[in-house]
Image 1 (cartoon, rainbow, N blue to C red):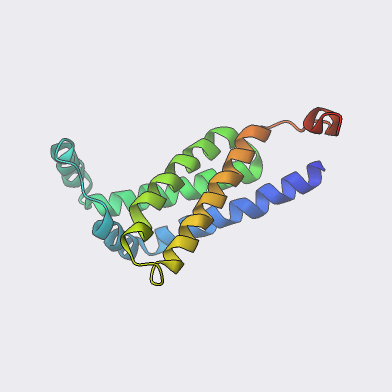
Image 2 (cartoon, rainbow, N blue to C red):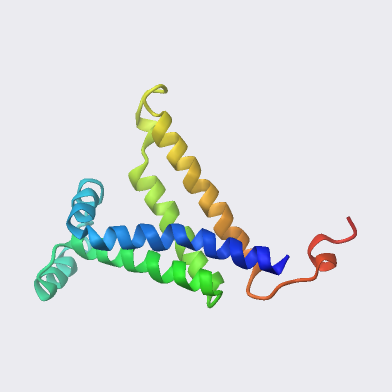
Length: 150
């Protein structure tokens, strides 16, 4: 059983490592897509301007780098089983926010929203897998403790 769990973690982490690397290799395209969906709130706009001035990058570009880095680091940590629960929690928050911001299937009519709905459901499945990683933890449990007297 532990070998399957390890193999499953590695295969699952490949998704985040690949998508994070894709975001980092195409930062401008990712930033352009983020700019169409994310608006900086007025409360933090002055701070965002200061960061933009200091880094000479736009907020969407900084978000693209942050998201790509998060996906790669979290994917590697889950694959290596080092801080897997913490990084799985971060990814739950990230995937939930990304699903709400980028998959607005509820604003489309039913035949046209099928692809977005399926993509949102895939993200929901990913959140479920991340919750299993959070619940399973770092150590392996014997079958009796995991499944009771079944």
